[in-house]
Length: 523
Image (cartoon, rainbow, N blue to C red; front, top):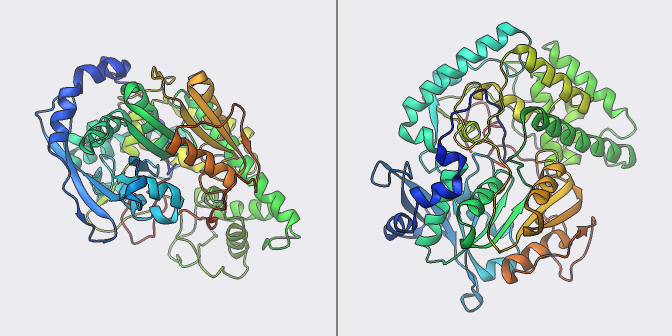
């Protein structure tokens, strides 16, 4: 969701946004892209990771005004380990919005298989508005006045409406002209400039979570320049507000149910033998009463939303063992060996806070006009998720985006290219639900190949051999899995892959930072 997904109330759309393929021809024709690419990328060893190379590419803030203000996109590259077997460059993005592709490239040897590392230069980039690429920033003094995410009255709704406008004005003033040009259509245009600067005729790309939306937009804008797009755990860019929230709630509830079932069966669960749902309800009630404190954060009680975040972060990996230990600790038991940072939006220190949520606000228009509508949406989510109630990711973004202009509103993907796209999904994904990827596959029809992992968590690459090798085969040889291909848990694919450890995603998410750290980058 990297993590993730806002809701907004206003729609301000240009003809270019409504017709992205035509707009691409008008605003970013081959000559413009070529001119940008001529600036080139000068590579040098990265200061933070000398084994990787870092560089920048200068791109227009507004692609319709190529001679106007410009920004530098930050990139990092790990060159193919076997030059004789090298196919070319592969762009990578970890999601978010807010995820750092530069840091994804730093960590690529621990994520991608040796075969992918042999065959491709792995090139990560921080998208515009993120991390090292001119991040969207706001005054910390304004950011820290953010009200509690869940509204309980029309007065709360009015307060949020006023605050979101003030926050947006502050962030636009702090960020400058780029603020209005950070949607995924603009990022896709940047990707094409990176492709050209790398000397690639066509794009090879692997994106996770929100990184799939960037890939979908690229396919729309530049259909004839697609070599291979592997889109892992997809965003569905066609959803209205109710369906968006309902599917998010249903997805996280399904993942929580899987965790409870594991605890009931496995003695290793720290809550084995207990009524896990009763423990969960007890913690939520204690948080509502202001009596629940997170380990190491004694100065203010946890909110109910921060408890719900435990259910998301503990099932994204999944990290069921750690989740069970955290719930036991919050219920008065011993602490786990390593306590993750307190999740959820929190105050920041310093002068500024980063707010990648602005990207979400420009990509989705999901209007909520008053508290009555808002309350109805929460009730609908609660029907989908009797334990989780809601998914805290979109609920934390919803009020931030009230009244925000949306330059890339929802629509079904319009891909006219001939190269097949590979879409991956797990059945039990708490963040980009299974229903999202299958919906995108239906929308794309025969142009999409669907790879279903019959397991758990957010992202399928690296989970099992049969969820990883087909993605490798597609990226390397352009071979897609057969129709209806499903990968069972523990499924083999003819090679032995190093299993990735269970993951508890925290400090690189904008909604999950240590109290003393400024808000930064997602998945």
